[in-house]
Length: 584
Image (cartoon, rainbow, N blue to C red; front, side, top):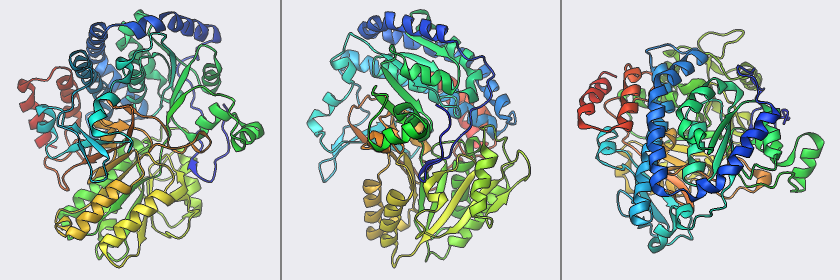
């Protein structure tokens, strides 16, 4: 699984990181897989009460290591302690793992009582019959902490409303006591991804898991292993280390029965078809060398559609912070980082928004480009766009925030549309249209057809714009027609990842030889087996400032408070959370 050449469409090639932990030997990998094989039937047959008990032990274990987990990430990424940068690591890392575990506990209790997880509100059908299941807020705590935010999962069109419960918790409705061994190839960027992918395989799909840490963040492996000790001690879970060679060995191993990868489409193709001339031939002939069931989340050139409207200076500033945060977060090393900002060419405030965006970038210090190859990737874009705006320090080992603006929408091979940059770089393009409604339709078509990938996208619209029924209809049509696994209204689509109850994964339908953003979903704590996409909606302006904004002053306080709240919700914890939120 060596690096392969960058294709015209897809994610940029990423060199393998240097190892901090010695790769696991083949004999130790064999031993780990043998243990999992020996216990897979036991895990598959384990009753719900024992599963719930294990999840409660896991939650306690994750809470015990939470500070070390976050501190290790802050140190490795070169972040500033006590700042919003540290807050990111809490909020996108250990906090989400605790929330995921708590939601799984609730779902399994529902399965025990009712046969399926119970929705917070009744599902309904759209006018075309498509079933929509509300999944957020899940309870009064969510409603209090995320006022005005909602999330839904839209089902595959073949699902009927009356049958929706039969499309939940499939493993528990008809469990296979044979069991399976799943390989999870962990992501190197966000610390919650690997553990949460493992939780999905374990508790939603009923498979034991070997988690191979990514070399970029393998320093977290011992901490995750300690937190997941209750599963490890019973032979249901193992953490191993290594790079491409170890990953390839595991993917080909006879004891590995399913694979899940969060990463690059290049790595997916190397697993499925191989590399070099043989890999290219196999892919062209649809002749995979690896035919095991593979699910994957493989990135996106994530678009944000800006709907023109009567934006005030405060609106421009807020939404510039919103959009900038969606790129600056984690130094731009996110599969859902904003890569293309779509505007209406005739909007009188287009340039004002770009200026507000420049100001937002200018106010943020550069981050350590901790992911290998970031400098080279940025430079490859700058060679095609030397006119790009750059904010912050330049030079060796530096990756300034980069805005490539006024792109040509007719240039279908534009690198900003076809290639995920995987660094702190985004592009801006404007589409001409004779009305706002027509612009929205064109923007959706552009996002669907010209931006590579189908993972996630957003649309931002002022509430006054929605008072025009033609615009309101166009926005709802956009939400319905956007072919992305997650669509967010007014906010960064990463919220679909962070709320955990929505599904997270590509829009369905990619064949293995054209995988794009991948196949299958994770998170999905209501355990739907035929989802199409998730839709998250939030207010145009939010007060207090959202904790995920990069200019939040107290997110480093909020992160641990939310983590401990998710582990043990209590009204007594709320005042402290609100005080920190208000100071942000």
